[in-house]
Length: 493
Image 1 (cartoon, one colour):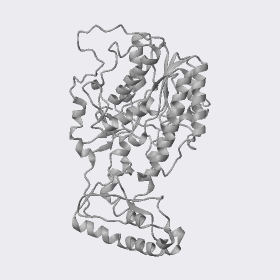
Image 2 (tube, helix red, strand yellow):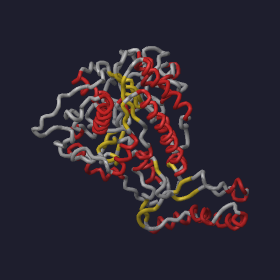
Image 3 (cartoon, rainbow, N blue to C red):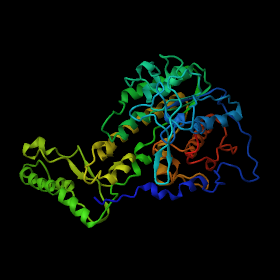
Image 4 (tube, rainbow, N blue to C red):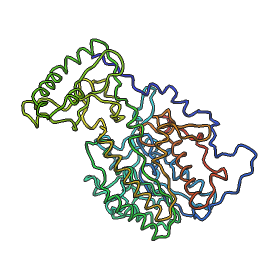
């Protein structure tokens, strides 16, 4: 079939320009005048031993991998550099061995392709960096580490005493990143953090309690139950309180607003007349079967004309043809009447549907046209609502825990929504949530660029100022966001 699809990354002719958006891009908190600013103070916060708890967003994950350059630009590491100006101590991280990214398991790569090298931009789109990872999962730990961010960790994982046990890897109960850094096989992430007697902590956890379900299109995995999430957060924050630690927390951004779900449009397929005609012929039997079902089941109130119209598949010559998806929320006609068992739950997408970023490379192969899309490729409005309800509930728990503990609090969810609608600005710079061109999200569509992590670090410092009386913002000591890169060269190895 002559179906052409121009992948949105071709738009990124300005990709390298993202690194040059006025190299002199200035954050509104960087003093460029002769104004006399107050001396920097930590207020009531003690940054002498800062420990960061969290997931990949804390570890510095970028471009679908963890690697040296990304770790150096991790949000906690950037924060520690500012904390050092007011008594902060050294800040250690479980550094990878290279800038390739990925992990080895006993000298071998994972057979399913996970934990592979980072992505880079090859001129036409994202590609996996050539090369073999050199970081061994089972290498001895050289901890303790101040950065306790564990990629893939959900809230309850910070309390699980088998999360760093290599014997549990095959069963999927342990995490290879924590296996590298755990002090012992029965150690917990929280326990190893507290063992360092931190004076200040950052806690950003909860994204993975909804993200896995979302990135699978709602087809696999599960959203953490509210009871488990609340119990985990209260246990973590309670232990920090008992240790007399001060800190800063953040809530969960709406994951459906990240580029992983907003880059691929619902109607990306241009067709010529011949191809559109061939597709319509291919779906003629399905459309005819819907009309028969309406004639038989409609009078019984078992299917409506509106649903039949919604399910009818139609392509036309030109731009903007919508993808065909399998929607489990449609009426299962075969379950009602065996005579219609051959009629699947097909419909064409609408602007209310979201599609995962990884679908983009498959559209030229007929996915969404000749091949209706399985549930794993999209998030229907019903699935999006499940995610929203869970996120809202989790965020209420996080806000309450932070308030009860007296911790500073970052509303990352509101920040994400502002980035999505273009209403957030940083001096003369207006970043967005667009993939790559927005400047803040890396090639995987989920994790920030170094510039994104710098922006987040500023938001954390502003929250710390508000709660503990420090003055990173007022003293002109926030990070100059524009000085941080939006991509890493494939030559960086």
